[in-house]
Length: 215
Ligand SMILES: [Mg+2]
Image 1: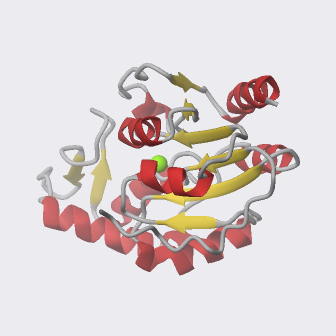
Image 2: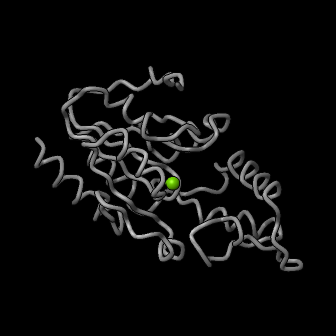
């Protein structure tokens, strides 16, 4: 049994809840990570829906091993405030939705990088609470939502995370979306119970329809 996370910094009001992934949903990840790799003599090629196997050396075309890729990710997240930018219309859409719902960020980034991410989010104007954990997302959303009967929504670009939430919070409205169009083209089709949004305007329309129907 995994210990519940300390999420005491998240205070929910008596209204719908929107739990939102960050990388590729609120902040661009693929494009800035590609720029970071190019600054380090590598590139990320959109050949399939994964990082491993698609990172290549610009010097000799070789593919770095798992340890080297992990080192790149560690270095990128440590300096993410120099690279990452908001996904198109994420800020204004979340601000509008937050008039009717609580918004909480749930990111699978290692918690050791949460200070630099918090600083970046604040600088960009995303003043919503954040939980950073490498634990499966389903139990975290279940812990947040508890026994509430209010609508709950979860957005993410990774099907594994959406399926985890589907398992642990069966009444959650699940939305898949991804900022990067090159890699989105390789995304697996959404599983049963998951709806796909093309962009933030589309996501807002789906979320409002769900919240309105549940209200
Ligand atoms: Mg993501």
